[in-house]
Length: 356
Image 1 (cartoon, rainbow, N blue to C red):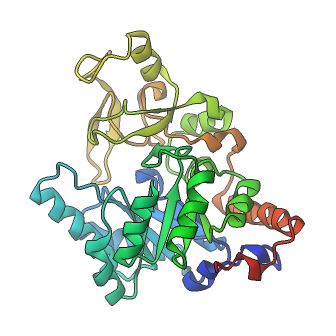
Image 2 (cartoon, rainbow, N blue to C red):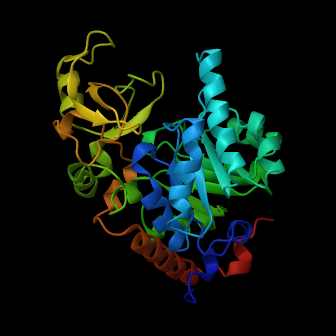
């Protein structure tokens, strides 16, 4: 490992066995084995999106990552149980437990209560990390025994629990739940942002938008290009894409779907332009090709045959500083080098990154 980024070697790095505390977010089907492995091979912590994989498919998914890297990596699940049936809850718990059984380095959870998973994970030597959007949620997670918390600011792309700026939420969470490690998410896409988070007490960062604009993220190239061309003012926090996951705010880029809905006076669900129609075909993880309804969640795959401007273009405010598409490994190394230079200039050596 190059002798750099010493200020980035937080206790979390030692705990996970990684070089840099830079996580790639498990952004649904786009965050596949290629991305997770590339991030981990570069010294970061790659996270695969696994919510769309049933429990019996988990060993094969994790096996594909292990074919590509011997470094630690994580598996991400959405655990939203609001309005879920008993059957849906059982499926989610089976999925998470299948990943735990595979003894991955960490299971990263979002949008729910981590408590049911902590004991089983620790019995298998697996860490539980939960992304939260508020101070109260962070406190509850710490009390449940999680190994780390990702504080998500409102600047984040994709589905957003945070309602506060990351720069306000982060120091409050760090102070409130110490010594539990805290990572920062939302609005961070360059080395300057990484360094700022570390200076505020974060032991790492979890980045989504920056890694969408990577070679390994599995998505339509036009979507990646929109990230590169976009700025924070092109993103909107909304609940427009609610088919398959209702009542879950999210941040996306403005597109035809948003513009036509806005021009129609922002009507409620059931009265929106083109509702019930298909925007194109989408191949599911099972291999099945299905019609993709307008206003449905999902990531436009590389072979999407519809108009990309009707698909949800998940993006955070950090798209302002994401100006190129490049290999994920280069992203990790560049972020680490830039952040280290900022920390060194601020006079923050490694020992000062430890939480008191």
